[in-house]
Image: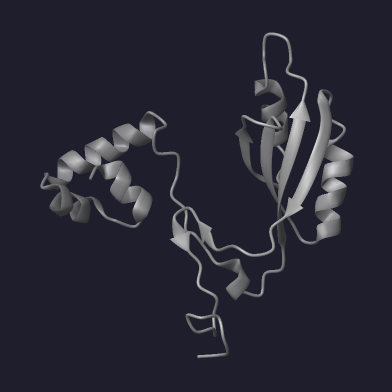
Length: 158
C-alpha cells in the first residue's frame, strides 16, 4: 500500500499511524504528504456522509450533456463554465452517447429542473441534456450504504 491508497481509504490517518503502517519515519511521511499537497496530487480531505440519515432535505441528479466542442479548447471551456455553478458537485468528460456528465444537488426536483433549464441548457454549445434523479445510494466512493432497520433479506425491521 502507498500513502495515497491509505489516505484515500481513511483521510483521518495521522502521519504517525501512516509511518507505522508503511514502516517509515513520521518526519518522512509528513514531508511526503506536504509534497503531494503542494503538487496538487492530494486535493483535499472530506468525510463521506449518509445524508439520508440526517434531517437535510435535498436531491441529487446526474445530468448528461451533449455539446459542440469549442475550436482550440475542445470541451474544457464548457466544463469550466459548468464547474463554477455552486449546485454542481462533479463534472466528468465522458465517452459514449453524451459528452459531459454532471452531478448536481438541489433542495427539490423542481430546483434542479430549473437549474438545467435556466443555466445549463442556455450555455452556448450545449445541444441537449438528460436529467436522471438519484433515488437511492447503494455504494459511493467505495463505501456501501446500508439501509437502516432492515435485515439482510430486506424484510422487516431488525
